[in-house]
Length: 113
Image (cartoon, rainbow, N blue to C red; front, side):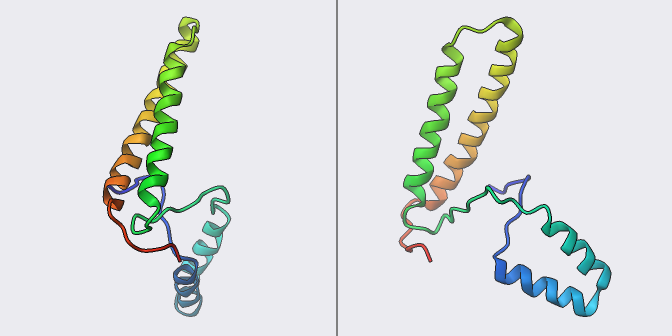
């Protein structure tokens, strides 16, 4: 399953692309330099080939679904209930994506590098 919201590069590959753009396409280089300001400092990548990915993703899925279940049981007013249900739907969609990644990681043998 591909993520429609984010794209990930290895730092080394990004630097090679940026250096190539600097030499051959100054407009692309400026665009890439601007994009670097939008990098996420709070993101963490778990590669499906990592031996520990399946377990880590399953723990994340469990936390998301447990949170959703608990929130659905809390007493909220009608307006708050709509917001909470929308949040629960989002948590469950994230859990679905993580479950797909967990299946991809099943049986991975590679240690993180």
